[in-house]
Image 1 (cartoon, rainbow, N blue to C red):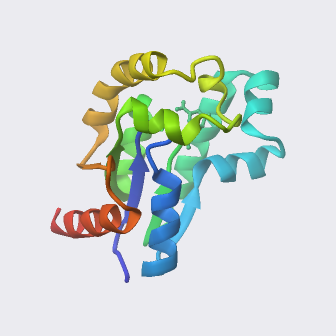
Image 2: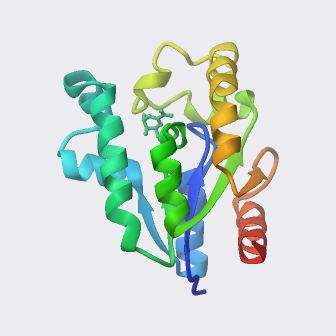
Image 3: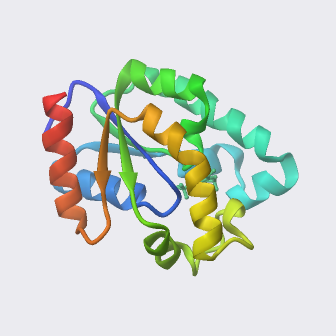
Length: 172
Ligand code: S3P
């Protein structure tokens, strides 16, 4: 399928942004960019190392720089890092070239998806439902303010989530 805009997938870590983008690439032939992967490539080190050696503010700047570089891209699904929607500047950049889709999941679902990985510095030492719920509550107003549409992922398959995204972004 061809889109005249980009789809920016936002939402909490582990809400399914990357797997949704991969599905849309495989089954709808949409181009995809994974922001975390792109930043790791550019920086030449994993995210945990960027946080450890350069600090979180440097990582956040890399995110904004990358979004600026994506302004001329189209027909692409961009899987954003979970913190991207926290900056108003980033939200404005996403809106300039696409529709913003918020994926949601309950803290219990998130925990199940992230518990065995160690590539998310913000979740180290926070891998329990209470801590995830607390961070999610703090971020929710930003996610909701940024979103053009919101799609729930709890108890749903990736094909179901993708079908809803495509139906609703096209109607926007
Ligand atoms: C972050 C989410 C991560 C990654 C970084 C910070 C966040 O991306 O960008 O660890 O602040 O929520 P995912 O949402 O793809 O895990």
